Amino acid sequence: MTIHATDVAIVGGGMVGGALALGLAQQGFTVTVLEKTAPPAFDPASAPDVRISAISAASVGLLKSLGVWDAVRAMRVHAYRRLETWEWESAHVAFDAAELKLPELGYMVENKVLQWGLWQALAAHEGVTLRVGSELEAMQRGEAHTVLHLREGEAIHARLVIGADGANSQVREMAGIGVHAWQYHQSCMLISVECADDPGDSTWQQFTPSGPRAFLPLFDHWASLVWYDTPARIRQLQGMTMAQLQQEIASHFPARLGRVTPQAAGAFPLTRRHALQYVQPGLA
Image (tube, rainbow, N blue to C red; front, side, top):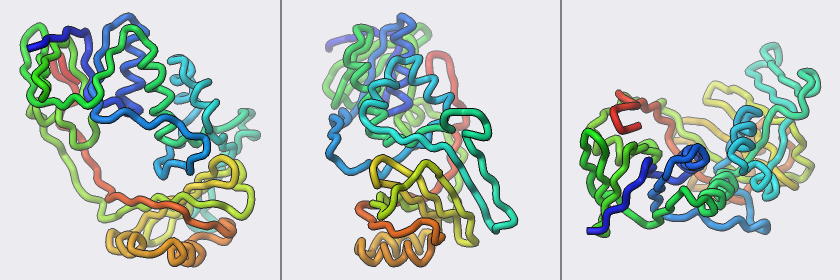
């Protein structure tokens, strides 16, 4: 059996795991990242990812401190300078960067762009070992270190193991940590659309009796729509053609949206989930 020793082993190389791995490596720790699949290289001609993150100035500051923001920004990001939310016109709240004397409130960034920017920095750092395709089979915890047994017959000895492997964390399950969870009885659809007009730099969200509708401006003439509704309604929308979905958007989003053409969509149920413990000796 091949044994690999490391200060920190992180299971999951997504945005959270990647940022944490890079930060720890920059502080002098040796870090091993286990990720099932490497993120795809950025293609400037590709359509936007349906998964979009609205990141604040604080998150931009973190990415700058990690030395990856310039690379992310060189791919594609979109600044938003106004944020609005309303239920009725008499209940309307707006935040404006100019009024706050800020250059912007934040940026809309595709998840795949953030992950690729972090992944490139990880691959270039001498303190980071990327294990792509490695599958965790068992975890054996000791007083001084934890042993991760991989399906391919290798083992990783780590002083600290971090589970950054999502809501259904394998690390959490192997540690015997339960969760407190419940369903919100709502689902969410993310829709990538092309706008007939410039999407601008204002992001907004309207609350309706069946759930919020949100607009996130992106690069060029792209934008992302977020539609919250009952699970049955979202399943109905998923079964529609893009032409049918376009008609539903026109009927159920506010008129300020303008004409949009949906190009891709994805949906997921809304679930609240908290681990009963987030930290144990040698584990996080």
